[in-house]
Length: 318
Image 1 (cartoon, rainbow, N blue to C red):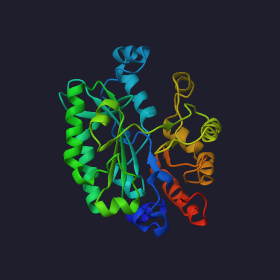
Image 2: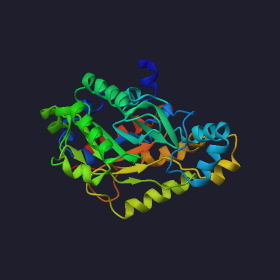
Image 3: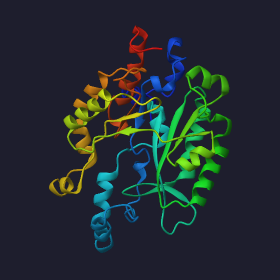
């Protein structure tokens, strides 16, 4: 991505390293962090079958009419358009990685959202590791979840690969991570692994991170849901407020010429307006990670990053 375009979108590949000293000792769950929803969906494979976990009717339709079903799923399951390094350059610090075992591909692991991706888990994580080497003071949360069709052996191999790839860059789940503490130890990666058995066996892995999402196509309902969640109190550690919209089969049927990007673009104004009014910090009603679809088409990243400067006025800092 060209530097000029990145600046126009408010991107900053090194924004964490530039935060004021007052914020460098805040636990990372008290800061505002931009995240991408379904981060790997930019490379969905339109020739792949729909997931086994999808509704039976959709799987049956895919078997009978794959030439119609798969392009439709592709239009509505694609939530991002940029590779991971470009997302990180824009300022994204939370990656939503939904891992799956692809039929007929042996032990290789991929990602999935409705259908499978073209890129493998190994290819994506190696790209991230290269980006981290070039930005030694930036910290990225990698959220591994869903694990479609993975066996215990797959989990063991995946965790071994993650530990080997990131090594000393991994932040232990026993620590309270701040920017300063991570910098002092050379730590850059927090891996949330949404399989309790594996997470408990490895202190380098964090348990699943709560993700608030409204399951609605209406941005007003998304905002109302997030406000309800805020009133119920924030989790003790990391948590996600999802600005992403969610369509269902009747909605897709009634909007045959639309896609998720068009739907998201129409909803961005109220969603980003709500986000701009939020405060990070430890108190109830505050936010931590905010996730959005198509993070490269708006000022989302810069807007979320700027929320941290509200803490300088004493609004929630520890």
